[in-house]
Length: 342
Ligand SMILES: [Zn+2]
Image (tube, rainbow, N blue to C red; front, side, top):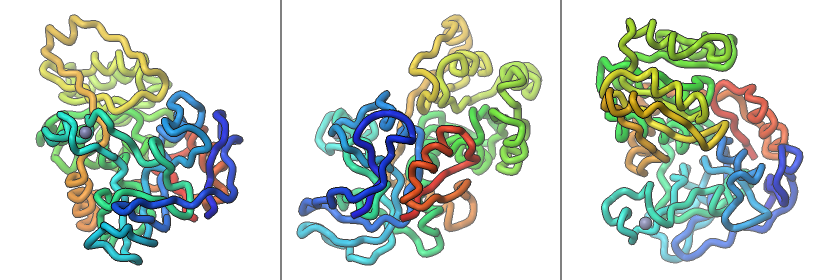
């Protein structure tokens, strides 16, 4: 098959488009013919070596995949070639303490499609049959490929981890990202009110159109001051944070008493400081999250079919143009998801 892979770490110039080994499925696996694959920030960490692929190089990125079933393993039941599917990107062992508690996202042997095994920047990808969900006809392959990481992660962060309620206020960092654009919509769906940050003025209208009441360019304005002004000095109930560094620290100061900061990832740095006095005196919660459950992904599919959630897609590149797609994301030119389409 053809795939976009890398043999050494670096920038977009390391992404090669060429022949690659076909996936070898086990009896419990399926092979998916990829129709669309979303790009994510984690892809960039895998590429540049900050998060080297655990299985080594060469490696194929791509954790958000939709397509049609090409073949199914001998032990797989209930799935047939040709079916339209979306792949749930998290792998759990099913037998560790946390899996047995039903908390598969913190499985001690957790892995991601496109990280711990080859992903969807390819014509074919294999996945366990247990990770396959039917993609409703009403959802295009492109739309479906924008759901399994960004939308699911934001959903789990706001609904399961932060326990967001109607009428609460939310600060969403980086509205132009997949996670940010999803978080605004999910917060509005719950009935919460949103202030969002963007990194350039041309993304302000974009964030407003998604449902943010107020939008602040964090490069030219202090988002803590803007959040305090928007909430009449109170602060927000929830912050969705996925930048790290100083953004993490300042996000803590944007919270009101009993507020929750949910940290989804760290773009700039893995480090973030905070003034502990804010945390204990305001009884704050700092909560980590990653991905979500396969049931939550199915719920999201229902909301997308109903037209209540719409993943924001910036543009799709051909698989052979993966290098250009990666550079486009590295340059932060996108408003919403960037996809590869074989
Ligand atoms: Zn486990």
